[in-house]
Length: 319
Ligand code: ATP
Image (cartoon, rainbow, N blue to C red; front, side, top):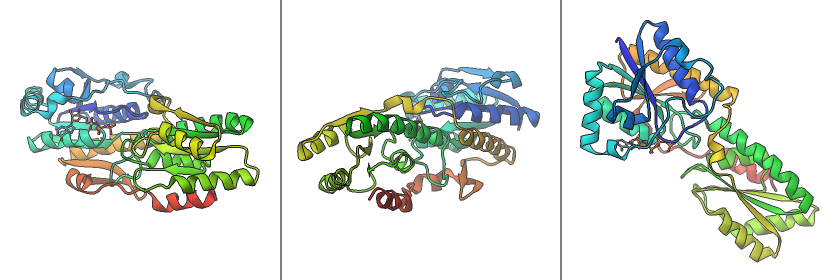
């Protein structure tokens, strides 16, 4: 193998740059030529390729976003778009490809793998919704961002003796809500993976008020319910002042945590190792404490489970 390319795809996640850096520098260390593709799959279709040198990734490890830019490419979902991308990679003699992104990006990666281009995925998504990796790049940073927001909202919630309902990202996953809720001491955490009972939530809020609690925080994962609706309902049932905050895209930005940078460095380097071993159609993940490669097929067939122990623990601690 002589020529490797790397791109980022889907939603951006803090730490993607550290992963790109690791792919570029590990490749150069082994004497490979390495190229960056801009705008994910759309960049393959539009021929947006550039050679990467050691300096191309200098001063990027601590930056959020992605220097390679990212995109969602409806054109790549079509057979014509896929054919254009495959022809481009063949013309450029790219033998190995690292796809940094989420589940959708890996599905796109599988198309390229099946077309004979050696492809390895690196999980980068704040949603942390990919099986066979305990952490996806960006998740830890997003959880810290939300925890910080909870801390700040708690101050004003306490001062005004209010209930705050905070909506967080995660698509169909409750991972961000659960982990940030646990870290931030939320009274209730509403996730798409579990049913919720507003009466029970209101009873809990009342019990808290009766024992002198000055504030309450409820975290709602975007895939479970609308925070505005939950806030309206609680306000109607309890006749209390409820404020709603939707954190939105600020959860995707910011300096990656040390954890995300280290994870990204390890997984980016592992992806290069796998390609050099001639492997393809795999994801490099961090699973049960080890860097481990798992075939895309298994990743797609196994939905990621919520950490139910943490879910129960969060409820116990907010009693
Ligand atoms: P995030 O989890 O952050 O949203 P993602 O990688 O899951 O990231 P998607 O928008 O689902 O983001 O996918 C990114 C791109 O991958 C799509 O725009 C599309 O070009 C390609 N892709 C997604 N699904 C498929 C598929 N089934 N077949 C081929 N390509 C796909």
